[in-house]
Image (tube, rainbow, N blue to C red; front, side, top):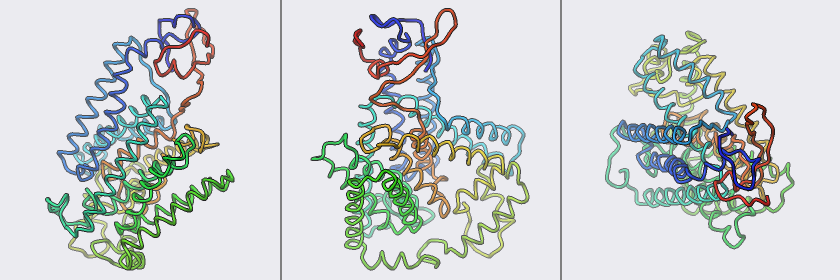
Length: 467
């Protein structure tokens, strides 16, 4: 954290920066909750795939960033809390700049538009990691996302049982699809639930929640996870299994029997719910893996697209064809006949390799490495440690999307991509909720020395001189 020019009465050795924080407490809250408001807007706007929704997200990101700049100027100093994932994100931004400035793209406009989306993701990730600093904020955001996810899941379930083919019972999808919840694609709905249900599940497992109320987030987790299966998304089902395997591995490592039994009970209820509501249709859907079903691409076609994508990569291996240009460049490499327009590779990892080349893919691997290394370091005692709980919930959500991305295009949907990158930044952030943290104080002489600062000072609340 940066330093400033004032001093806390009664605690002259504390960095004066922390005193001035109280003046901007309301602004910081606006930046934090404003960020999550726009993140929650995205899924409701059909995943923010339409131009008007992208415009709203762009405007929101611009306003939040402008407010953050004003806050730094009004405070008289610039403070940026570092995050392990910022370096690979910055490196990727430099690569995109090369593609745009030097016209290293098969379609410059598509690359510019896709780059704008990544700027939006970067702003939301930055704001969340800078301003999610207080224990009360973490709990508020966790309950907010749990309630939001439960409401979306309940709406999706009711909408599916009504057998409507219209979004919100009023709008017909222009290009067709498999509607589920507010999404045209059931796969993208499953991606959203993959990121939200772990938050509710970790709330149910964490000891900071009173045991008499843990059934509330547990029930929300059951409904959200259940709709992943009821949506019929096979990629979502596989991603859910990957998340449970990671969680089970962590539970086994920590020998946490209490949480293991709770998770087992939750899984059992999910199974009962999905079989009671989905029944034979769900069993049949699982059995279609490897075959063509409804509007989905069959796995044979997916493998052909993957093979064609590798041929595209071989043509431009270093910097790729340009971010967002896959649908433009792909037709000349397509090896099979179809009257359908292939807008995505249905494999985000391959599409990222094709569009950004080895350099871009290297930044992605760097990003994932930083994410898991930073998050896994914080998981010790996560069931009673808020830092570990936050990291676990966010990491499970990111794991679901990364696994699902081998089969679908969740990271091409702005609403899902924005939430994914924000959760990644939160998972990797060096947070110390409810504990003392180490900062550096700048002496007039120019020397630096470590100081232990109470969390209350960081929160902007008064500090007792006796501390």
